[in-house]
Figure 1 (cartoon, rainbow, N blue to C red):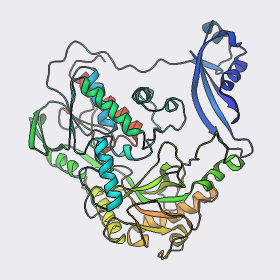
Figure 2 (tube, helix red, strand yellow):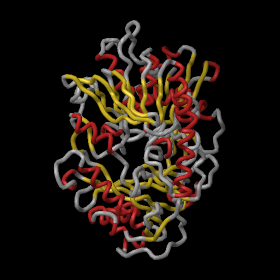
Figure 3 (tube, rainbow, N blue to C red):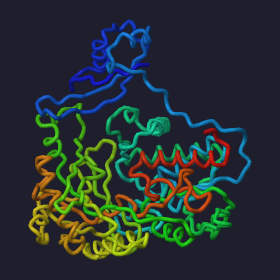
Figure 4 (cartoon, rainbow, N blue to C red):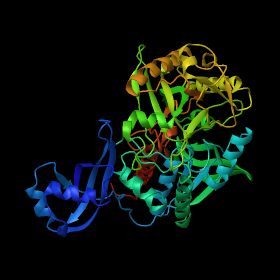
Length: 534
């Protein structure tokens, strides 16, 4: 196949229009077409009077090689073959590898190892995704928290209760491999070509379950409600892992442990630190979720085309540099979504956002975040960032009333540095409820002032962002992990046989990058064991 890109396609075009436009570009007739598909698709809304799609078409043609040679450079290019993991040498007879965590990183590490015949053992502190959905719903309705299974912990990781966003800035052939696998396990086909693909919180659990079932069918064992509590070492190398579940403590002999624990497992990070696993401080972010009417975002992004049936709910991604030199940005924007309770420890409150696949809710929401630097931590202890998170989340808990209602503030009140006493036209979507508050009681001054500066800057980038009645919900503190677990060129930590990966190790920032890092960690472990080709 060859890829013909940069095709301008009208919103009203029929299904065959991309192929026709592509063939016109290379001056070929339809009789030469063997097969075709959409390779890439995005919306170009820079000119609000001419919103259109920009596509790439992958097409197999008779006489393809001769045609390619005749075209000008850049008009078309060969479609690259999909990524294939290196071959495995013979049958593996060593100790079974252990994976801690079954979010994107752990899931794709387990899938890679299972397909290579290594029958991985997976330890997940939370529940299966089916049970986890019920537990999360109970928390949203009643404020009754399960500290071990919630929006942060459980099968699928934190990404299972977001928007299922699959965007990433990394360049790695494994990205397409991950997309292909998600599609093969039930995700919609459009994730293979959309510029900003997503699965949706409502569809992602079925995909997660299908991947789990393949791993189990290949001989992997997945233990839920099973928390990693200790690693035993011999001569600074892994000898065994100890975990605790409903039936008590259990030990697995192991010389390979892939750490895919996610960004919120502060207790596990503490255990690893005192066991001798080296880690360092890492910058992270703090802020709040901001909600606008989705219709406002649609108009701002698409102008008069906002209600066109070919366009879904509009997105945005904004960033700026604040006067004090810090960065501010929006993150995990959820079109037509809701703000959700993301707490994972008693007495602390944090929030996240999620959208269903249809993205048809009334409000849009996004994290509005300000950089937190290591010099803000107060000391040089690697775990100090977790202490900051805990302090802000405890303040948010108290400001909300101490029952997991979330503190909220109108944008105008925040900009005027005054407490909110009454909400306006934008109704917050957070459950189990909200309480009007003053974010100066929750956030450090640099973050509070940073939100003010960001709103001013973003209103210049996106018309209407500073909507006086826009609602901010606090506190968003778990966008990334405040530590990095160091690893060498072999992907090993300072402890032999321990492979940190994903968001919890500080090497990823979303579903895609975490999944790719899980594949890389599994491949590195097999190469180091001498069973996978370089």
